[in-house]
Image (cartoon, rainbow, N blue to C red; front, top):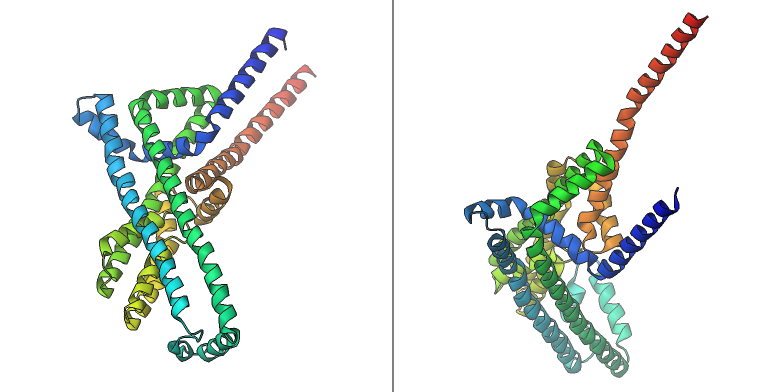
Amino acid sequence: MTPRRTAQLAITAVLLLGCAFVLSPFFAAILFAGTVCVTTWPLYQSLLLRLGGREGLAAITMTLLLTAVLLVPMIGLTASLTDSAVDLVDYIRTQIEQSDGRPPAWLKDIPVVGPDLDAYIRKLTHSQVEMRKLALQAVEPARKFALGLGGVVGQGLLQISLVLFIVFFLYRDGARIQAQLENGAARLGGELWGELLELAGNTVKAVMIGIVGTAAAQALVALVGFLIAGVPGALLMAAGVFFLSLVPVGPPLIWGGAAFWLYQQGENGWALFMVLWGVLAISSVDNFLKPFLISRTASLPILLIALGAFGGVLAFGFIGIFLGPTFLALGQALFVSWTASRPAVDAAGEALSDAREDAMERNA
């Protein structure tokens, strides 16, 4: 390798590392924006056609639509959840201060475990003053946790705002970016890398369809349950189920809160119904619908989908829901391509060997 070639490679490596370092705080937002853009690209193209090919106007229109669908409802939901969490902590504090330290009468009526729980709590509350002091000390950390949770959600809203900002430019320049990616893939690995690029886009679409479709189904089932049980604000709470279903163990925070409210209103039967509906109907939708939608759309084995989703979340956070299955799909495609090409390579090797033997015989 010539010194000039070495210098070119060194400068290129330093430039790539510098770009990666500068963009590293925004990787998650860029990847998520790309996921949203890839999934909604057909809708953008249809809108672009209706607007006479004006890319800027179509991009800003799509961005405003996504803002109305994602950001505005999340702001209202975040404010509502934060206020509810603070009110719940204050209610628990009041109940502790007014209690006499004895367990509630209904506790011992719980089948099988009720009497044991009642006896255990009575044993713990033998010293009422100490127990009340301990309980009140635990309330303040819970309050801080609730406020901290609101802060985390607020940070998530800022990230969504950044995603929407990036999405505008991806829409506007999407055609040129797609052409550059296709040319780069062709120069890097030829036809195989072009197929992998297409596979990556299809997998991202499939995962997004699976996640959003499952969230919509859970929200619909939750809305039915809330209406049957007479929970106020059923539509807002169903919207909460939709957004929280995008994160693990999200929907139980909504339907569990509804069940607790019903219990506080003295509606023990409806509270039990809400718990059963949440466990058997709302949360169970995620167990079969999401793998079905993703595997049907992307033709991926359910095992790869499950491992990709969970492993991706552990490795990359929320965006890993989309990255995990995509990486495994690309790895599977590479493996299939490599194993499928072996017979052809072996056949070519055998033909070359036969040709050499024939040549040796003619020379002899």
